[in-house]
Length: 365
Ligand SMILES: [Fe+2]
Image (tube, rainbow, N blue to C red; front, top):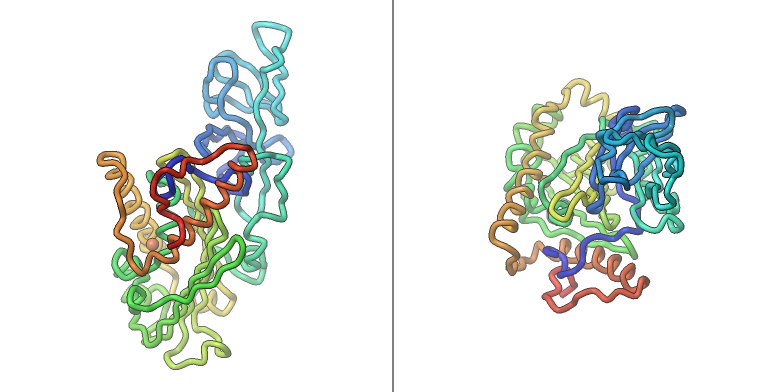
């Protein structure tokens, strides 16, 4: 489906961020992940679990049930399911039918996120969690900011596209992080087997009032923006501000903000967006003197969330369309290609043949 080729939705055999740790407790949380209802809760020992979110008896949402001990109890007819998915009690009968059980999903708590594996549980290897490549996410020397969350009313690849094409900073975020000619600066592209990176070096950038006030940077500055995409839904990078004329290979930046975005398909036309950042201790001291304006930081994300909602609104009302590709799309098209390659590899390993009859939006040109 747009912006991927027809018949392709999302890879399943990979880790996706499903929830922030703080969201999951002793009250069931329902969240759609890859078009399936999932219920999350914690056992008495505090371990987070993810089970199919629909009671196999009458299809009532288990997110509207209650937690008893380590089990979730359906709020309709009282069926009780343990953390391993088996049904341990049915109020109206003594025997448990063989099909009366819930699918369980591998779930790993890492940093302040819960990572879920929607695909074949036998393939769920914790070493594949992509933030193993981003030490500052787990390095105690770095000061992390609380993870944020948005439900986005738009398909996940639109959000990946957004993060893979930062020329939108100059327009959509002109008042906040749009300082310097981001749109007019060519990016350097690097890639590996399942990741790709864009790097922009913007010399002598004029910073916005928002950066001046919230980050204590007067400018002009030399700005380096890097974002790495670990397919299919994790983006990490940095936004660095150097004194103008600095040797960016050797000098320390005046401000070094590491950013993390996780994108998870919810339904076919919506997704989950998790974001956070980390700063080094020097930057943290600086930011204490100039406390970040949390309201306008949230505004940046809200602008993206609303933009994607608007694109989805037109897709729903007017259907797919043929894009006019621009030079700036090279990176986003590679990202789509990477996600599609993952989906196709899974489909072919299952013997399914994806529909290739429609234009290959995300394929490399
Ligand atoms: Fe944005």
